[in-house]
Length: 112
Length: 113
Image (cartoon, rainbow over all chains, first blue to last red; front, side, top):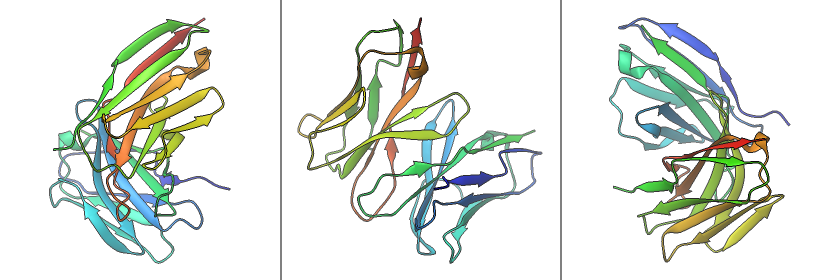
């Protein structure tokens, strides 16, 4: 059974650009969550989706957005990139309910 | 603000030792708690999931306990090996209708031969 996949794995952008990251959950999983990980702030919740609906959103500016498709795949978008957006972006999926969550390998974003 | 603290922040031990990693949380609403390991630059690997109605879970050399009344969870690693070297993170969910995890600060473990 394939795990959570994230593309691309590495990304280098310059300030002001925008970026789209993709996450494919484990087959059958309908819940997808996104996290940002930085050395200073640790793991911070961005948002979660269930059946194409955003259920919860973290405390991030509106430049961060996401969506989920009917096949449960999810994308997140960051517009007008800032240096502080450099981070490892992690995606997790689960069957929802009280189930275990599984994480992908992450996308390493570097903003120059 | 819900806070999750992990002690110690870093730990370096010789191979073969039994270890206890601690996770303390201020949030009284615990739906379940999950322990993860993270290798440098990689994603998170799930180790154990404890539901709020459970007191402990075991998988191989790992045992995790949950005490909601005291706001603590511990991860016990028996007979540590160099391959156990990683950062260990605890995280909890507050309710059934969200998958949002609130993460701890992590414990960086190094096991040397």
